[in-house]
Length: 378
Ligand SMILES: Cc1cc2nc3c(=O)[nH]c(=O)nc-3n(C[C@H](O)[C@H](O)[C@H](O)COP(=O)(O)OP(=O)(O)OC[C@H]3O[C@@H](n4cnc5c(N)ncnc54)[C@H](O)[C@@H]3O)c2cc1C
Image (tube, rainbow, N blue to C red; front, side):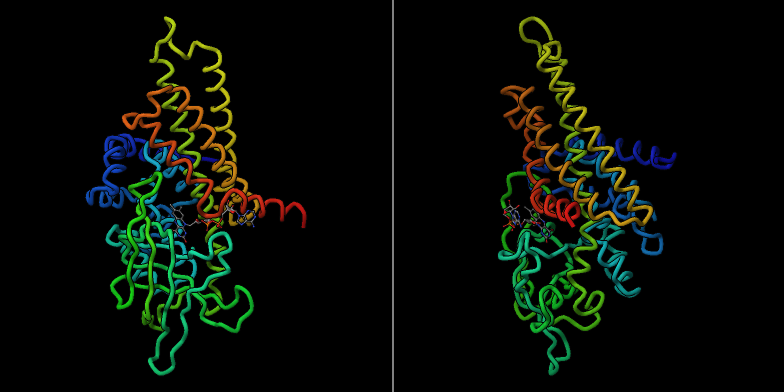
């Protein structure tokens, strides 16, 4: 499945994660931000445009390459994968549905590390049920533009984004999800504001906030795709997005396993390293087996995506599995660290808090099970 270029990329991403991410991960978690220079470095290495074609400043790589980089980043610092969101939720709507002009204007600077994008679907009353969107963006004949009103919540990069793809109802008469459209909205437009930066359980350097729209004028050329296509755009992109989140889960699990192996070899109790205790060694064996099973699932889906196969079922399975496995592995890895694992001086504490998110966002584990069982029983 992997070619030489994939192995080279893994080596590059691993070295980057060890040299640039690991040393600052704990500080970034405390500060709730990454240094500006890091964003630029990530772009310079091409990590902001792994899957984006060269025509828009990217590397033209495949999804396996993206999964590799996300896995390697997350082994050291889960929040750092939000630095490369331009390859997934932030960038994909432009890539797949944008006009040439929209791609050059919005996607290219994101890939070049000059701007930050966001993907705004979730609302206070529309989480798992994203079709229940209340935000409206209605055409105003007199003003010759759309008028956007509403509130989106939990938006990754919300506090610092330069623009966002916002999903809103543009037709109040259309049935169900058919009235939803996607719009590109710039942060400095009048009527755009942000909620406070959320104080989250983990992933602090990946910032999150509400986005609020109060009579924001959206020009016609900022409609993304066709009117009424919004839900299709969101769902189509979520398949690939779920593979990225599954890679996050895989990376976190693999990183926790590494930490546990290392610690168990060093920590001595009852006169020998704790890895010599069968209960600890068996925990490590279970963790390694689960990580490997997840890895096979994740890369198989990435490979299928690269072959342009429909992956809705497998992406849901990979996301579900990775979300649950990273939580189980983090739990066991922290247990192996004993009391030290509960202290912020140890990376396992930060990794365990990060793991908790993977089974929640981009579709909870329960929603993935709905997709999987729906496919089984149709
Ligand atoms: C840190 C963070 C970052 C995020 N970033 C973004 C972002 O950038 N853009 C964006 O648009 N959204 C983002 N989200 C939102 C995220 O995708 C939602 O939180 C998620 O989809 C769940 O929605 P909810 O929180 O409203 O939970 P709810 O939908 O209210 O779910 C509550 C519980 O009910 C269960 N449940 C709901 N419906 C069903 C069902 N039909 N069957 C079985 N169980 C069900 C859920 O599984 C869950 O356990 C982010 C969230 C977080 C926490």
